[in-house]
Amino acid sequence: MDMDQAVLFADRLGSELIPLTERTSVALLPVAGKPMIEHALESLAKAGIRRILVVVSPFADEIQRVIGDGTRWGLRLTYTLTRGEEDPTAVIDRLGTRLDGPIVALRGDLIHGFDVPAWISAAETTPGDSVWADADGVSAACGIHRAGALDLTPLSWPPTRREASATQTAWIPVAAEQVRTVQSLAEYHRVNLDAIAKRLPGLILPGRQAALGLTLGRGSRVSPRSLKQGVCLVGARCRIAPDAELTGEVVISDDVIVDRRATINSSVILPHTYVGELVEITNAIVSANTMIRVDSGAVLQVTDACLLADLKQATLSGGIADPVHRLLGTLGLILSLPLWPIAALAALPNRDRGWFDSITLRGNKRDIDAFGQATRRNFVAREWRTRIPILRALPRLLAVASGDLRLVGVTPLSPEAADGLGDDWERIREEAPAGLFGPTQLDVPRDAPFEEKLMSDVFYARQRRIGRDLVYLLRGLLAILRPASWRPPPQRPGLD
Image (cartoon, rainbow, N blue to C red):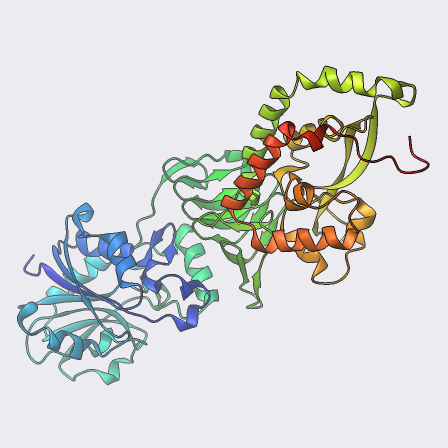
């Protein structure tokens, strides 16, 4: 074709899509598993375009890192920076001779769901200095410019009506429902679902069809049984638990983990998100630990990493670390086996009352209560009936291996004590999992007042980091060498 160069605008500021655009550009928001700008680049490459000037503003470095120099599409990309949402004509005029000859003009921060290459072919045979796509009287931000005074008004953001353009401009209509400007969170949610339901035929969806209605990206593990009804697109490198349920139209982006018995219905899950055990998500957008209900517009920040978490910022005590803790707990249990005969000998004087004490504690596993909320499950912990601390606590490694406890976390409480946490500051400790080791278990005396232990747990929950967790884990493992771990606590009157 005669035209081999294009200008691609991706300079939306994105205030209408906050909080999604607080950490990325509109052009990089994924639609059906690909950033919006990638859909535009694919269309231009398919149309035979080879040289593209990309106009960017917020998160310019990130855009350049993601799409690079265009070689994977057979393109040659160059970049120019603007203040954002500037007049496109003025931007190109500033470039002087950087663009010469006819050009294709397109926005890369909205969705063209029609066949862009076919439209460009039709526009080439249409008379006029400029030809633009008309979506029911509004510019679709897709056009070509051949000659005459440069007028890129139809490429402006927000979209303009066709009356605002030069009189010599020609227009070719496109289906308005296939042009998605994505000016709200609800519209972003809808364009994702429409894309995977193939209501936007101009888009090329990634992945392979693993089962009827189920499309998978490379390296993802999903059981077809998880899709109960509807259609679902799962991006690359995802892990979906076999007993998780996907219903309706569901889009799961790259690098997502969905844990056991989670339910996702008619929702969009953005990259690097962990969805915890028993969590139910309906008609929502989820980005890391942020849930957006598109029906009400409510934005919920979830602080409990066992429910939702950012996989880029996950700590050792985060919800996604459950398999790691269980594996390490099992390994610790195996390594502790030589101590169990010693513990049995220490408990021998009390064998008439049984070898073990049983204690009910509030753990980390989840149940659904009568109101449909995920709540922490109680479990029964065993302790050797001896007063030697290190030996008495050995059976708690069983609770770590089973997932009821983590290796590192806050002190596990009895159900009565946990239910008695009424003040907001007290419940901050619930942001961290219950664990075998932690600052309270290692540094606060066992006979300290409950309030002191509570304050220690709250401080840990707010300050926890993977580096600190590793330190507590190492200190806990070295506790076997501390004389205090083998010394029975002082006998209190009235106790054996």
